[in-house]
Image (tube, rainbow, N blue to C red):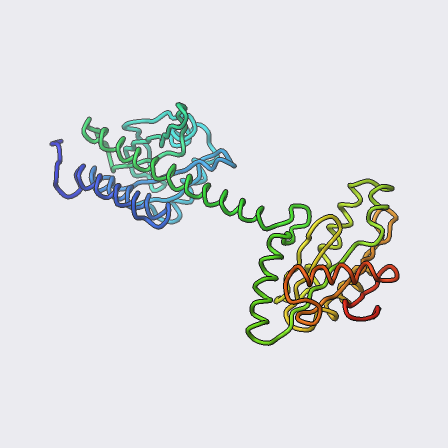
Length: 340
């Protein structure tokens, strides 16, 4: 076989397609399809298949095929995944590639295949991320030029897998850090940082529109004594149960957060804070006892602009209303007497 240079389907077209796929493809499937198709064109292969190894599952999974029917692709995917001795499985898992493997299709046609591991290196350690196979009808002798070209295609495919996985992991980490920064880890509710930001935004909007904002603050009744008597594990169960009721009770426009200890806060646009607080108190009152301990909360409600014109003043007014409440499972307004 003569060495192709700048001709269509030659090494230059493979390099061009691979570079474009790595630089501009929107997703991994698209990048790999471009690379695999360019390789098939360059060596005149009739069929191709690419498997990747899912780090969580540890076995090759079929990602794409060329020249195979849906039925044949499904059969191949199952055979490779379930048979550790299948040449493609070995190429992916053990980096044991093969050149010139003969096999028959389900229809009985004789084929010749090349199975190449997809290998990446990191920290001085090489690892396989999958396998790439090309096949020709009948007997096909793989030339040294074809072998070099296919190894380059496999390297491009491996690079694409590593690059997109790295990007996906970076995005997941960024999302995780963002979630941690704004979420209470015990209850899954927003945390104080998020609450303060939301409250500032709602107050700014209310000032522009001449509307109201309600802040309802809840304390778990007898929580300190409960923690001391039953232990922090039971206390955590109580907090999670209370958080679940809060999340299920609030309106879509409301924001609910755990701001520390046994304190929860709802930011409710408009004047419905008292109504929302009453629903929450009633809902928590219907909870079953936890380890023999009844669960209830007391609430304080403050409203903008009557009880404060900034976030700190409103939260202080709501806390003061809770402190002033006469007993368990009560709701007090900052500017008035207990209402429940």
